[in-house]
Image 1 (cartoon, rainbow, N blue to C red):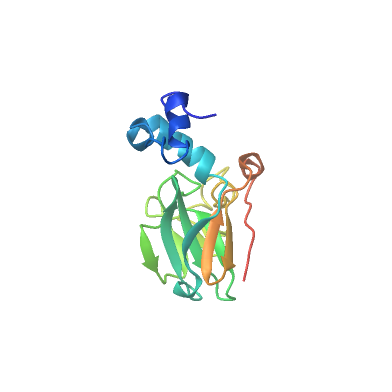
Image 2 (spheres, rainbow, N blue to C red):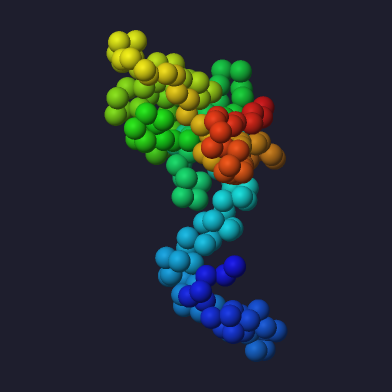
Length: 173
């Protein structure tokens, strides 16, 4: 369903034959409602190019945005690509600042929780003394998938309901 701020008649004119066609309505370019619709309908389930595969070597990580989702692309020592959420499962803090680095772990700056480049929870300060704390895992962003194709790393979200059940990461070499 197209956002209500876009007039259906004006949209129809933008798809008319060239001699009668008009540009998109102004709201298509600046409306927050249209932007939110585009994020959900166009980008949330689509494959997005997240970079070149050869830019991530074993042990590398890169933080970036995929639509409105903060993600981390990593390549483990065995060459496997991973797409993880860039949100700590503890308090929701950003785990890795934007850009690329070669740190061997993902460490949340808020409380120091540590994850491997594969997304596995490794530990955190004073967890053994804290009753009731269980191991958490950073899930992939809404079931994120990283695939390599023709030298490019592509990512996309998968079914949000499936991701709500836990860590969903598909691996690709």
